[in-house]
Structure formats: structure tokens, C-alpha cells
Image 1: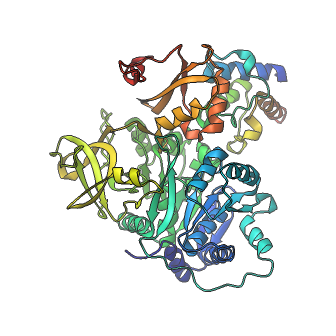
Image 2: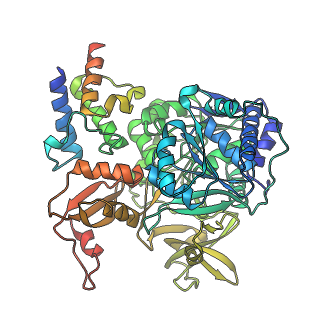
Image 3: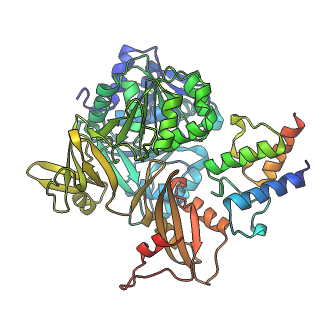
Length: 520
Length: 86
């Protein structure tokens, strides 16, 4: 390991490259040097200390992706606390649940969302300190905020905290099967072992220009944030709105001469279909990295044809381990190939094996569950000791995280993904427990029964909801979509709704999912 | 094209493509399309391609924002302003 704590990457680069541009906010064009980012996050650290945040506390981030949110993230790490990022556009009740669940001491929140978040937290009797950043104050909401609250002048106090590698660095919440999200606890060692592996594979330097497409609550962001900042490179922060706009993203890649792009296959598919990539100069791109879901081969083939010089890596791993296997896509993809590419070999910083339900090794070539051990594997789920112990298989060879992904090991230790053990699906790179969608829809007063199923289609995974209503009539589709928009994150919104008088049942009177899968 | 024609055209397209089976009267001029989850980002791109083709306008990437497209009324105003500036 090259550092004990993740913020040391920034501190080291700030000493080495103080005048180099560390980050650019693509939408506004604002940028910040390493020296400035380090100093700004020092101020965040000191302010957090002043309001009582201590090492091992948690601090929430409910901000749009920006230079401000990046500085906040490092300030939280520097005080020795763990950051808890959420989707600022997700339903406020869900965000309040997350912040209350892990007991954050303070939350940086976009000022326009502070009041609703405060109300939702009050309903849970939670009283963290809300630190509102107001973008209508000007382009530097964090500096403005700090100047206002520290009007007496921010005396730079002593140094940043030096947490040990096994201290908590961040908590990422993912969809939970019981209907509430669960917090994956990750340490400095978990993050830095992965960042160092990325260094080995990507060999970045200070001339590199990385995309940051994933939001900070999504684990892809760990590479985007820490790898460029470790190497004195520049990270280009792509915000929510720009991130959905393929034409503008494609021109950003060309005009900013990005050298490393990392996103989900869904975003790359959008770029292929609407970005006119072949008409642009993408020669600077060294690597196109993708993760989070299966990349349909037909779109990948077209992408490779339009951006032929880059190397393509399929990165695989759940939030609990971050990337743990990888596969380099070959130079040419056979015309008749339709099967998705493998998830590849275990990364050098992990151990992988394929096990059965009892934790015994499965012979090569047979299906089994992929289990991972090593430095990047999470501590556990926040406040869920039973879920945590159920997620691990422990034997004399170590503590193995059971991914829930069914794989086959082929020649050379190359794994191929075959499916899931449970009702979790991946869409646009996000994990979705179908049970969480059902739980949300059961809260609708007119709905009496609901079942969600997922289908794999050429364009990706689609989610279909079957429901029965109390009065036997179909609900307005607009009303259903509106209800989902206000009760679920956008990536969980079902694609289809089907009204039924009653849902089909098995002989034990459970909802018959097999029957639903066969229904059109 | 006047505002009523644009509204009718946009409403028909949204009902047919994204709200099959919905009663037309439930989709009003002020129904929030993006913030209420009726149009996701892919659906918004499809709608924009349709508007460009049928109204003879070009919509710049920077204009793909909820302020222009979040309701049928906003869409009509936006398309009319584009047509006027041709």
C-alpha cells in the first residue's frame, strides 16, 4: 500500500504538483489546482472540527457533483471521519433514512434541499448539523459558506487526522431486499488497495485526463476521484444533467482530450447511439473502462469501431469489494459473437474462488458462487451484524465475501458471469433489489398486491411490475410513475406496469414469480 | 404551427410512446413530465428527435433541460420560440 489513508493521495500530489489543475467542473468550466483543493479541504476539516466532528464520526454529502463536493469529501476524510454520499435528487425520505441509519454528525447539503431534508430527518427524530451550500451565492458556494460561518477567520489548526488503514473511510448505501437501503462500510485500506491496483493497470501520470461520470454515491467514483488525484492528473467532473446528454458528453471527450473514460455500459451505449463519436477526435483516449452491468456485444463492437485506438477493460465487482476481476476486450470482436465477454481474472490484490452453498470449492467448469477475499473486501454492513455474517464464508483459508453472482471458471482463471443467486438485478450499473421496489409500491394506498420482475433484453434490463388494486381498477400510469418518482431513486423506476385482478399464487399461497415470468 | 397544434402533437406522441393505455385527459398541459418520472433521459431524447423532425427545428444539447421540456405547455412555448428564431 502506498498510503495509510485516502486523503494522503491529495496531500502528496499537492506537495508535488501545487500549480497543476486537479479538477475541472465541466458544466461551469471552473477549475481548481492541487494546492487550492488541498487548502480548501483543510478549511472544511477545520470547520468540521470546530463544530464537533471527531475521528470515526460519519458526515453526509447531499450535493451536486462539483469542486465543492470534492473538497468536502476530502475535508471529511482529513478530519478522520467517514463520508456518506447520497443522490441529492433521490427522494428526501430515503436520504433521511440513510443519514439517520448511520448516525451522521453533520450533512453538507445543497441549500435548496436543506428544508425538506430537515423535515424528513425531524420525522425520524434525527438532529445532525445541516451545513447548507448555496449555489445562488455564486460559483464558489463552499468558499462563501466557509467565509460566512468562520467570519472570525479560519485559523489553520494542526494537521489532518491520521486514521489507520482499517478505519472507516466511506459508507456507500445500496438497494436492500427488505425495502430499505443498506450501508456498505469501506475502510481506507479497502479503497487504497484498489486505487493502487488501478495504478498498476492504467499506469497513469500527470498528463492524464480522467472522466468522472459516476455520482459520488456510486462505487465507480472511487477510481474517478482517487486515481487521478494520486498521480497529479486532472479529473473532469461530469454532473447529473450533462451525464445524461450524449451529444455534449461526446464533445467533452474530444474537446477536453480525455485519456481515461469510466462509466457503465448504459452510458457508453448512449454515447454510441447519440454521440456521433466517429465524427470526433477521440485519439487521446487511452482507456475505456466499464463496469456495473453486462455490455451488450453489438454496442461494444460499434464503440470499438468508432474509437479503435483505446484499450477496453471490463471491470467487475460489487460495492462490497469494488473491482475484483477484470477482462481486456480483444482487439477484434468476431462478427458473429453475441455472448457477453467474461468478467475476467482476479485482480492482483484479491483472491477469488468458486464455491457451493456449503463453501466447498466447485470444480473448474461448473457453476458456483464467486467468493472474494483480500484487502478491498468491506468491513461489513452498517449496523447489520447478521446480514454481515451471512454475507461471508469463513474458513481456514480466510474470510470470503459471497458475491451472490453465479460464475464459471474457465481457462487461465477467467470467470464468466452466469446470473444471480437472488432477486437482485443490475440496471444502468446500479444494484436493484426487486423487493425494494415492491416495498415502495405497497405504500401506495390504492395498491393491494405487487410483484416486480426483471427481464434481460438486448438493450439492457427492464423491470416490469404486476399489481392488483383495492377497487379492482387499473391505476393511471401517470399516477404510478409519479408515485415511483417520489418514492424511489430514478434508476429503480419500473419500465412497465401491468394491472391484474389478483396476482397468481403458488400452492403455498406465495406470489408465483415463475408464472409472472411467463406472462406477457 | 400554433401552440395548440404543437401541444396536440406532443401529447399524442407522449401518450402513444410512453403512456400506452393511459386516459388522454390524465395528461394535462401542466403534468410534470421529467420531475414526475414520466420521461426518463432516453425518452426525453426520443421526444426531442421527434420534435426536431416534425417541427423542423434543431435543439442544441444545452437546451435539453427540464425548464424547456418538463410539461406540454413548456414544450409548446419552447418549440414556438425556436420556430420564431429560425
